[in-house]
Image (cartoon, rainbow, N blue to C red; front, side, top):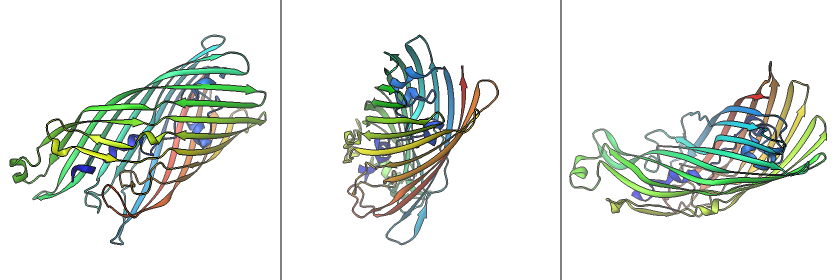
Length: 400
């Protein structure tokens, strides 16, 4: 019964990478590993940071509106209630010296939010799951000449997760409920290199994997029948420890200025989800709750393309397409993360305001392929999932 209590914590490294780390990049399908459009270059490719000619402050927020449904053996379609999630990004990029630029990124590259009806058919697997992961990355970039630059910076990731699910015990107040909370910190690094030759540019970037140790997670139990509390079968609370690894990401991108007004880009991202092959939870005082779960994730590929058109001195238009492969294999799909391959289309606009300010707007649609799970290894919970996401974004930039 307790073996899959903690599955949603895996979503820290389970196919829910958030690719909305800047409105310009979102508008171009995330294909910006080779170009320095604004302060978000600190995150996407520290090497390209040295090629910015101005300093930037960028702030942005995205509104993610998912729509997920499940069709199980009963033939009744169950839909997740509407939710809105708001990943954000803050960037500072500064032209410090002739060949050296510095920057800072604070953003949310990983996250999860699911919330099903409390009495839905999968309530004994999950009712709600929420994950927040905040990345802090100071960066230094050096320009060797007009063609080549490099950059790197450490990453500090602060994360917390909260899960609730029902237990197959009933009291006068309904199903018993368990709520799980945990937090942790991890360290990693982000590095990149950029090469420019006329209208052509190549960028390579790499973010390391980072291991998050959760040493004092808390599990609290409510609505448990008093007899189970009294005989010690289920305590009112328990502590656990675990560790989760965020995957590495390798990116290579090319950009080409077709005309002074038109830029096209192509990107390939390769994410090392395979590092997440198992998830173990150890309870120091309640060993009966210990669980060891195989996850068998696979490395995944994403292909991205974008175009930017400078329509006027004030207005710039963008569009992008992407294909994002899921790392979740058959037999491991669950309602905490009903993931599948997805097709992405995006568009956006930037408009220069008065002074040195400008505003960025983005709109993205993700069509997640229908995923049918027929033999779930962990829970035997079978059915078909379908998800679509609409993502709107707003950013503000100050250039000096």
